[in-house]
Amino acid sequence: MRSDLHGRGIGSPLFERALGRAGGRVVGLDGVLAQQASYEHRGVVLAHRNVRWRTMGGGERPDDLVELCSVPFDQLLAFHSAVFGSERERFLRAWIERPAGHALACLHGGRLAGYGVLRPCRVGAKIGPLFDDDPDVAEALVTGLLATAGPGIEVFIDMPAANRRAGEVRAGRAMEPSFETARMYLNGQPPEDVPRVFGVTTFEFG
Image (tube, rainbow, N blue to C red; front, side, top):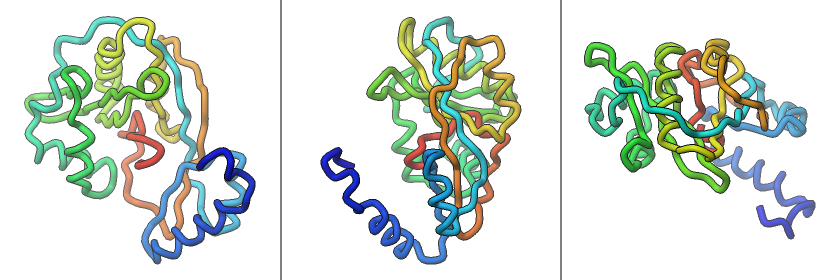
């Protein structure tokens, strides 16, 4: 929202109108912690926290990673849908169109075991999504994506605090928390496989 419109009571009516359009569908949001109580008054329920971690790019890309575009799309879509909880083919096709090295995958016996995407942002770059079967795969992909970002570039990754295994990826790295949100839902929760989410795609789109 434009800074000159802050404090004019516009946000609440817009929020209520959006909920009205959603009807009985599941609605998710990542709210700042200061607004968590306000959302709860509207019946929105806390699912877990997401923490933004900051680190620096650089290093070497592991040899066993492949470009994500080399993975058959139907295999990628099935993997993504199982983690995210619903199919979003059009979004996924657009999201993974990245330069070489910015969208990487890890295969085990020809089977997709995880993938991650690096994208530029206003400050530095962000990793997300980072969906993986286990911390070792997530570790390899983070290493590869940080190498792509390059030395001296700030890199951010939003990790669900509910995924305890994500701590294994941060161990041994110089990573510091810089921001935190409350992931909340109205009208139930989607069947998201949080233990396989090592990096949220984006707070705006989940």
